[in-house]
Image (cartoon, rainbow, N blue to C red; front, side):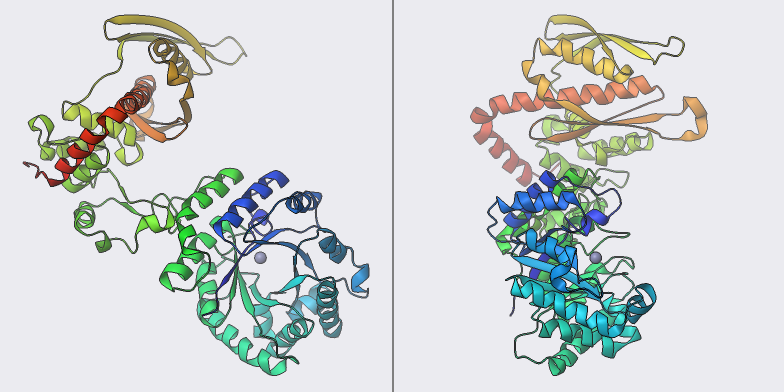
Length: 554
Ligand SMILES: [Zn+2]
């Protein structure tokens, strides 16, 4: 079966999405990651349209790509001039990429009403431009813009434009759903019909290779791409995370696993699939866009289980509530703690965190009840793994406090028009030693964080690698106005992990302190565990195995 070529346009069509921008250097780094993934074509940009893209192609010249062919994008020549005089086409040649992708018009509405051009000249523009690029030794990919809309208005002419491209030597002819308004059944039947009609029209015996380029305006971009593959397309265009104009392009993080796992169509090497989630994350981090949790296959929630019945079933047999093994795409199964938490969720999560719920004669039923009660009060443990672990340790009397708070004081000052300033004093004890420190901060929580950090630094010098990366406050129930309960959520990270903690109180400082203290405790416990890791490794594994086989007494 012919392999499907994956054509990535994150760096060109992707950057047409709102809030998506990359510098030339960032583009190069993304291109290297795409290459490593085994993507066949990387459309780097439109050299005729902006200097940043010209710079990207300059940078790309100096790199070795093992799998991908770098592609420069542009349009067919302008009406009424020779291809060799067209600035756009020249810019493509100057970018020195092995592949050129150019788009041309299919839809008479665009040719005549928008551009004021004639249908004949449009055909000549397509033929001349492709010939020019072929004569310059390029592999040419022809994008038939608005193909499906054009085909619906004038099927004969639409196919004629493709025949022109094929006769001029285009290596791939890509049907574009530029406006994103076409539905999968239409894409499938039109693509199949084009395949048949084109063969009859073209004047050479070379293999005709069709591609598909879809947009997500009806939420159908991925489905449309798959429909076209079913009808014979062998190249799929898309972007990582579906970034792109308006509602985005077809999302390659969906299409690649669908083709590879669900349809068993060879595309990228199967052993590379496990890098898909990290590639998705890398691109969203670079674009500085919060990753979409429910993104199929690679989203944080894609294999997350909340309902108790689901969890007890997946503990027996993951296939019961999972359409595939999450690890194949580099994702993982997660069990969420929530008000739906059943006994199995807690057991599963505890096991994942290495906490033995049956330790010290504890009863997991009571623990579940308490968790539910706390969630009633505003805690939300599915977003706070760090606090959840600490809480489980406390419930099962396995908690080992690595510091204890004696007291803290926070003061805020506001002077006329000057911004507020915050000062915190913290008194903690570690073992028998007491420590008092003071610090300033941009706000009360930052002052507390700084003071606590300073106090603990004397005991735990490695703390400086830990950072607070996110701080969110939410009113749990707004009915009590300023006396309402708030939930504070803190996300922290060090060089190899991100963890989240939570605090709930009517007092925002108290809630913040709870989340902050849990965050430090989590980090310190992690450090302590790593210190003991080598000597403990064998014992821990034995304990964990025992935890699996040991029935809880609940
Ligand atoms: Zn597009």
